[in-house]
Image (cartoon, rainbow, N blue to C red; front, side, top):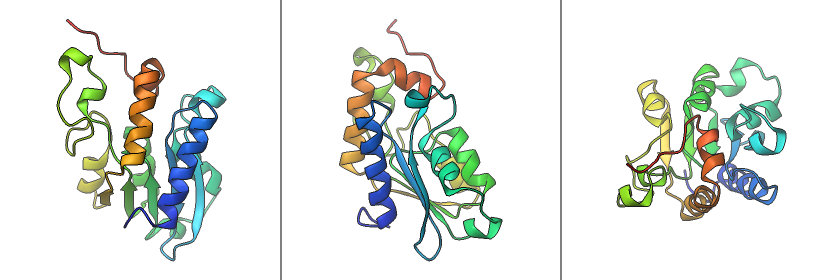
Length: 175
């Protein structure tokens, strides 16, 4: 799994499209075991005034109705560690592998006075279901892609209220 995979490239392009539309820059792409793209999409919560259209959900929706066998051996490429809802969808459809571009660190949700080192450090995540995926036998790959992490850092810095809403949380306040 690498940044050169067609699925990852498609997910990254979707994230950029979401940013161009004024949305949250997260993209995803579902690829079957033979390398065929089944669906792709990006976070559409802001654009569609939706509570649930995260990138992975948008991707599954765009893939359309598929037989259960289509997901066997499939890979979900996503530019950010999937949230609990998207993790649940990957588990429901028995996606075999999740490849993520990166995951934001705790420092992205705390005020600067409380910021922790290594803004996008591995195992410093505040949201995401990668541990649950691993526990359920899903292979999880974190590419730690600087472009994905940069898109999210800029969005979170510029639009913290939209980010907290996207992850179902309230902004953190300094004490």
